[in-house]
Image 1 (cartoon, one colour):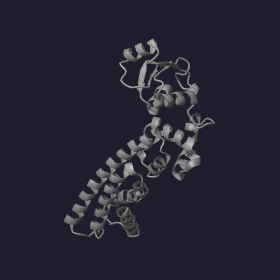
Image 2 (cartoon, one colour):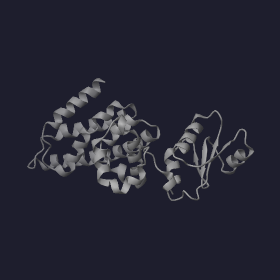
Image 3 (tube, helix red, strand yellow):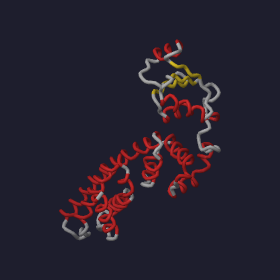
Image 4 (cartoon, helix red, strand yellow):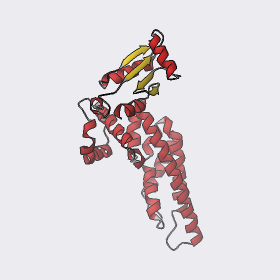
Length: 256
């Protein structure tokens, strides 16, 4: 905890000072991104990588803060190389946070979701599928806490995402491409908690499905063997398989 407090105080002291003059087009976005990470250190799965990046960023800025446009060329070159290394580290951190954002939605950790969203990572919106997933999840949980950044994005993009905002804040799978010919089969067991979660997901989204308990149903056992099942629950959507509780994969197959 002391390390976290010291890093936050150090970041505040750095933010009050000017950045080095050279290479500002590279440096300024990196140092601003560093400050946006402060809230993430309070989330255990993110803490280690975020603190490592912040420490790296602080070392670069602290060491090269005196660099000016007329500084020694060797010093400027060293600063440029340090910025390139920091830029690579930031890209890796963005990839990590993008994966953690998907996990936060899948495991319903809304506070972690909000903390990552507020870092404004452009990677989160490159995929239309992920973008819609973010907006839908946010709409369903917004009363628990809001994001000015997301509210602004949604307002700008409303015309393209409105179909994914029915009354209950979940995707209306009755209006997706394959709704009229879709076949959904759930293979479950009676005591499987994840089978119950899949069943609830399908019912909540008004998806018609057939369920077979593989411990009591011969047809269920045959389907499990036919699709070379390894885990329960198993969802078969138009002959494509999703094992375990994987909302992302189910959503993707139910849409297309």
